[in-house]
Image (cartoon, rainbow, N blue to C red):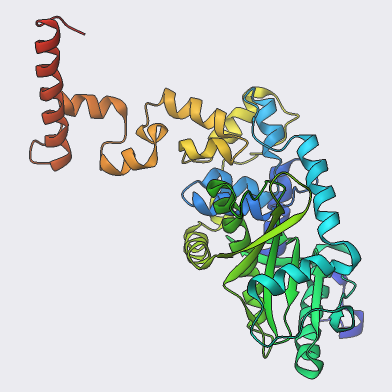
Length: 394
């Protein structure tokens, strides 16, 4: 029996350390002293889900490390991202779309994904709850409450609800990621639609396919997070189609299209489940490892290299450390630096030297289909060079 009564029990005894508390402390140590965590947004989460084998990105993103500062300190700064002009233009466009309590946005949602017989979102039938709260945890709880209230209101009086920049949470390898969709609309039937607002144009009713695909992957992350809330909300469901709002042609007028994100949602869910839990990656690091940009380049390089990476050319458009990882991948002769499709074709041959040795008959099992194909290709190449250059070596 404890020598302290419950009312006099010491604070440390009443609030014992939990595994989650220990993990947060460990991640804070990895970031460096007095370094606040960098939020993990949906764009970064979608990129992480697209490359679940990269422990380096999983750990750094989960710990809230600013990879941009790390890349600068390593001498390999990233070159992707929006310009200040694009950010300003995007913010102005979003403000226009959401003006007057989101009247134009709701009209577009009703036109693109509204159910037959659903009343139009006139001002008297639209709710715009206040989602302000302290901290991301508070905003997440306030959003969940607002969504439940919206479903109840829809069932009672057939109202629409417009949530401007709600906040939702999604578990990523054992660490919570707080995400902020541009908007979520609750229909009179209690269903929820994610709205993604982008500044790239929609010309003649169609936008750039690559950009639409990126927006769909980003929105799929929001859908996954909202589905967790919907599971605890009677009468609620998250719609499979999101509404993408973009400038019409070359104007500042909004246009919208419905985008089916079922495939992106399934892929993202599967990839997130494949991520190694962050505490397992952190436990394998050498003692004293930290990703503080203020330390010496040698120490920072050693820290970054202590976590395995899975570089592919696609990383150049999605990860701040891509140039550093590319240099290391090329130096090691890894075939992944040439692309994932080629890596998949080469089976157990993981380096360029191993591929060349197999092609020239210096290594590899001749019965292996990959080795046999490489040797056949090498023979055809030699035959073609002989015919073209009369046996001269090239």
